[in-house]
Image (tube, rainbow, N blue to C red; front, side, top):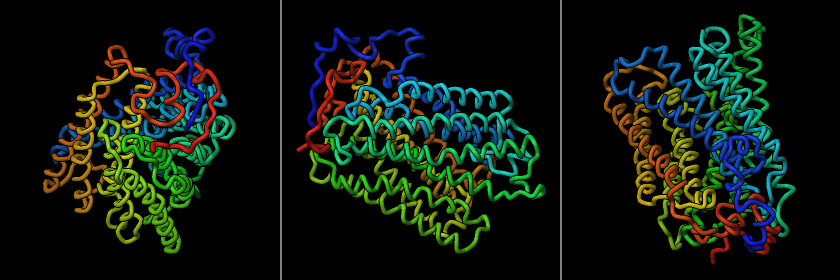
Length: 538
């Protein structure tokens, strides 16, 4: 891409030198409408929720070291895995990359000064925070034991936990997703720099644009579902309870109509991150750009027609099961295209094993394992055997932790010099990246074996024959925790003591690298003009 390079001297008299120099008072942060500062507000919030949910996961793995279930009661265990799921899915995984890296980078990558609706952007963060407060209130009120899925009739009829408070928190945070999605869509449509046609957009922008579409179209269905839970639980209106004339399967249809596309809200932005890192550190243009774009949009589209594969054992008709199985297999095609194109980009490239490249390569391995095991679950007969076992837990975490979280960590390290103007400790960052790869495989690979052997998920005690695999899994969780704690330490240290970086320490293409690090308040002194295709590395 070619652009007008930012001139620091021109901008110094009009605006603060960079977006971090505009003041450090609480007011200057809480009332900011700068997309870069709002990204930081999200980053701090989701990091807090991430470590909160991770602490719950570690307690779960400690409990499962011994078969007897002697650390926690069954009730406490149920509340702990529910808390882990609710916090991680709704307050970390869904907003992680879009709300932080997407917010920070999308305007700069298209040559814009800010989001289309800066105040709406700030409002989204306040709504997210309000939803988090309700969820934490549910914890203080005794916790919730329904799992992150709020399955009925348990959540509406039998559970004595703080279901309404937790569901209210998730209901509120959904509006934050919708507003963020609207902002991404409108910004991409209306604020692209001259010459930046749709087929010159970076794949990270495409990924966040598709994610925005899914957010806007799917999230209202979740909101309606949670309102119906509240109506039945609080007022006894028969919606899901058969005794009141309701249908419990209706809940599953509504819930998974949103929650399966939500998987792509989590994974598509990570795919966008990897699509930026691999060309940069292999010094090759992305292979099959058009195929990558079409794959992104195909994944977003197919995500809406496969929710029924979560219900193969629910008693739905055989014909519905076959159709949902067929569409679930179709999702594998664009996913495979993307994986093959990343591999082809690496082929004969001048590969540099930077920290973010290690994360990207880890993503390829982990996402491939998660994707291939997803094919098992799309097969009707296999799914009946594996349904609600640890195989599901392992598959889900290979996609979510191995895909979404690894992508987020890769993106954070790739753009850290742009975010802060500082470098981080490469040796410690390498140790952390390898700890994540080893820890994640050690944690979740044994769970494939547990599930295949018939161990159900969500049990707080189990037969002794499964003990060795559970101990290995818990050991892996300890290594994984190290892989997450180290970046918190060395990245925090680099904020003040890290070596200063230039505007483009990786010699990368893309408009965001054509401005200073950290960027000025309005990103560019002059509107950039784009004259080349993306990823012009040769």
